[in-house]
Image (tube, helix red, strand yellow):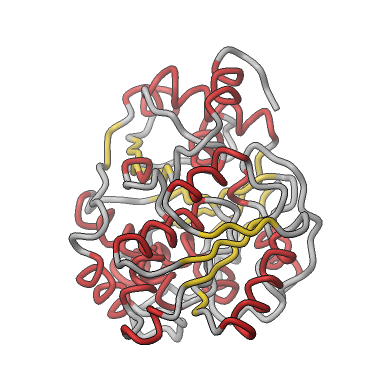
Length: 339
């Protein structure tokens, strides 16, 4: 299933009115330097041969927490003044953002509380716990976890670090786009895992400002793809969360979404959805052919290429967003199991 944006849309320029600008992303890059890893962009011989175009993998799996989320969380936390930061941080998360906030809090010696739903895999919960954060498991959806965040902000005066709909978080994720353009100047297509839109919106804002004709494609799963539904409806809508191999892409985008919906609506050229088998194929390929342990959300770009759901014309950059997958589940998938 695919949403194609209108070919009649004007080419993006730096003057286009978007909520996060290139200057914001450049400032974020300077702020987080030394706190996050500049991840490698590696050529995939196997994928390039399969689709007949040069394919490069941006390995955000190499971040200290195993996922891109550290960029946005670190930029948001470093943007706070000391008094606000020391009151303590709080966020809702499907796993990787919570781990990122917990990591940033530990690095800066401030307390953090991470609210997650019962759908978050146990390995991701334990990874957050290992970083010293307080954990609260609330309900069965990201919305349930967010309600607990709002309660803690009100009653304990904790400082919220939103998982995606925040200008500083988006700018932090957008630093990936700066690196892509610098390392691959003839880039033509970027495949980005799409959930709440912080990653896709941030990268799109950076890349479109520097290379307006680069095609930006968001990739999500068929089970509960909130941003896809919102773009199709023209506004944020309620979706039912479902279990999926791409668990990090779960959750809604918020009815009061201020930033990421507009970015994704205006800057994404296409949205593609994958079946669970196609996501599993991406995980399997990453392990067998690339030697990389990749979670479902991180493998959707690879899965889209293997499934022929993207019309490639290279060079193509694939954002491999994270590698935090339960080891047993990963082993089962690589050995041939599907969903």
